[in-house]
Image (tube, rainbow, N blue to C red; front, side, top):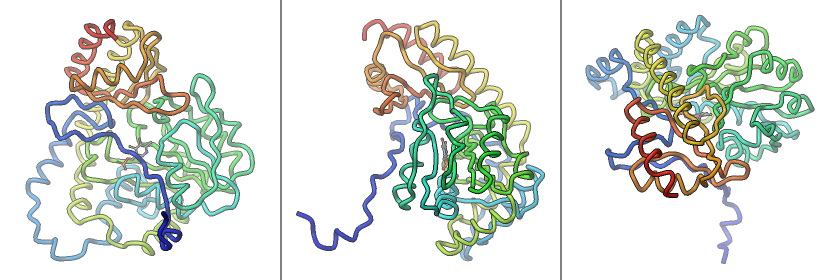
Length: 354
Ligand SMILES: *Cc1c(COP(=O)(O)O)cnc(C)c1O
């Protein structure tokens, strides 16, 4: 029986994040975290953080962090918006920019938070089907719409789209906001960032969670024309001025300083990814070349759900999506070389028993 007041409840089916097991011994390849620690400079600053400032409200403009991000990318601070993880930035962007009665467009297989926000904010949406090889088909985004969003590289496929194709989508979408979610771009795809000077309606979204090993800190940001950033700030300051805490603002700026460590970490992950792709193929898995820190693989003989269950029992967590078209795939985050060697050895020894 429905209580009367329940008619007025905003009902939503929430996003399901990957498991965060408390057992420290598991090999965790299920949420695309970085297996390496944050930069030494960041850790040093975190250890020295005293905490006296916490008496005061944080700086609502997060100026120290905005300035650091702008300087890092060679932009003006007016071109940068920060949020509590890119999930916060993306949610604010949906609320700010997607207010048309025409549907927004994103791929049928993509980051599964997009349809959740669209439902939450009552935004109509359509999901053009990826090609059979799981690539995004640019011309599906050329028709009339209320806005466009896609990740590059796409998640959970790991496949990237060349800048020429991204620009083709922009050429055909001059009158709506186009958001490129670059959560994984540092692992080998081409960024759309240079295009923000040419397209005032382009928003490029990034995060510290994956490539900078700071999923626990919660920093995401958007880059675009000053007018887009102003609209985002207007909505943010109409919702909650103090979303980001002061330690995160100050320490986040530090996280951009160790460029050498950053590049070295990326190189290690990319090398391990390429090694693991080769090993998985030798075991009968198929996968497109990943440009992210995960591999999206299917096995020609063994059901994905079974492999997932067997790995889980043995303390190796990967991600399985019980969804149309991708039920036979596993998304395997790239861990350390040692972790991936353990995974491959386990599969070599146990795959035939499935
Ligand atoms: C991980 C991820 C995000 C969100 O990351 P945050 O931790 O909230 O910054 C956004 N988009 C995609 C495609 C992701 O995979």
